[in-house]
Image (tube, rainbow, N blue to C red; front, side):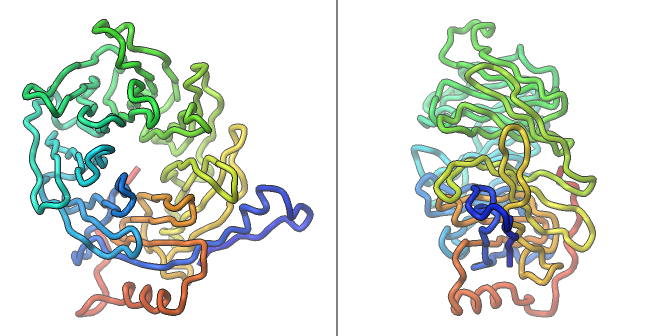
Length: 379
């Protein structure tokens, strides 16, 4: 299902070893029986046993991490879900927000979710939220402002930070290892690094400002101490910055007119931690393929592997891929996209039983083939 060739002159270099990696399709899940329901984003629980998927029908669905078997869903949103995250301390809890400014907290052991009584100044401009690593606290972007909340207090809002962005905040992310560090990204092209342990004076909060020159879609942390930030821009570029020095280390432009970036992930590949970029293509005939590359010294490697689309003889995706989730030290990838499919890829060749199961999972629904999914511009 996927593969790439090695360099005949350098069989032992790390890039050639990585390019020999192959992933094989093991399982396929569906977002919904509706033909026009597609998948926005994927997150794995901190308990490492459940995958949550946000979908275009305003639901969050749960799947087994091992088999993608459907386990339940939350239906507490009335508008498209823009962001969600698992609680790092209460492993069954999911926090989410939607395009109308509603924030929901769902205990996935129960059917329903609770809408939190949060009043936003710009409810239609809520794009992102995130739990603090120690739990109880979370942050969100309210238009140009970053707002901090404490779930233990009746009056949950504890701080509003209004000084540092001049356009809508598109993503907020706490540092996974330092609960006092919060990064915010915006359509103004800035990534702000804040130390929320500082006193009430907002001027003391700002540690660094990274100017990416273009509006930012999402950010992620990488490095041995997660001391760097990778920002993905709306022009399908990548900008790398250092939390230690405050410097912008480099940038990579869009690779081709039809290419788009999906996400970055930092983790082990063949015994060495690497920053990996996943990208897709909008080129007709190969929509649904996923290209995997590493980033070194501000440059992209040759493709390590390509997960083929359903148009290329694979049983993979047949439309744009919206999210890639990396599991099991990069030995497992789970992808979701506009065809409504969840695909689980593993480095090991599947047993015959797994091959047969994937075929059955991919079989046409009763009544014939599904209609073409409704198009939606993802980026």
